[in-house]
Length: 286
Image (cartoon, rainbow, N blue to C red; front, side, top):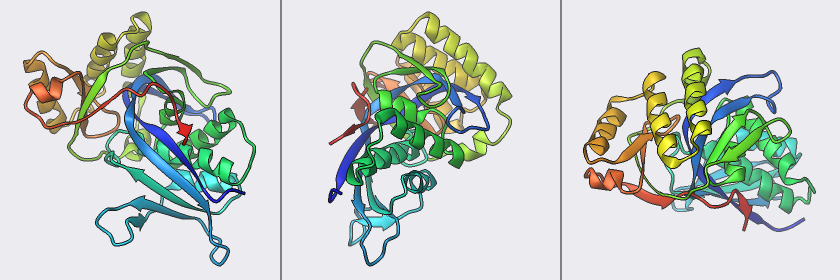
């Protein structure tokens, strides 16, 4: 057993998706496409103290004396239960939570990778991705972030589910990414509702990007999806119009009250965005 291990998982912005439920959470998931980001989530796992052998999840909070605040993250808890371990999990990220950046999936995948090393579980990458993906699907916090974050780049999810059943491709490109978040949206609320119209729009968007796998096609398909799925919020709509007015390319992050732009679209429109880039690789142990 090691004293600790740390994993970095890129953030993930989904541009569009279609939902594909299944009784088996490892086969359920989504088709769609998105961007993985150099802004991400760092997860450090240590064995739980012998005196208090229970799992504790702590989120970085620079305003507290300890620097961390206890939180409940169901996918992380499920991952550790599946691995049959009790651990202290510290999570650090500058990404806003619940705003369409795949942070719950990143926490789950990071915990799986780091705990596997700390507790010497000897599981493969695909096995760990499957555990994290299944945990997030069960929690209702996401459908495709984990498999995208494990791959990196600009992933296209052609078939849903964990590695044993999914099929991934990607857009061979890199880009500067800007984003502005106006708050959160409830992923469980959206995914637990009627997703038929949303999925129909997602299938059309995917067909377009498969036919033309470029960043320009991706951002166009993402905007069309957000509009046709009726997910645009007033804040997002205003920002998209502002970016379009300066000939920029932007869309809405799924599922969050967030706008992302390629290049300098948000800066040119007068916003003060966070800036990063697409991540060239998937999740990794540090």
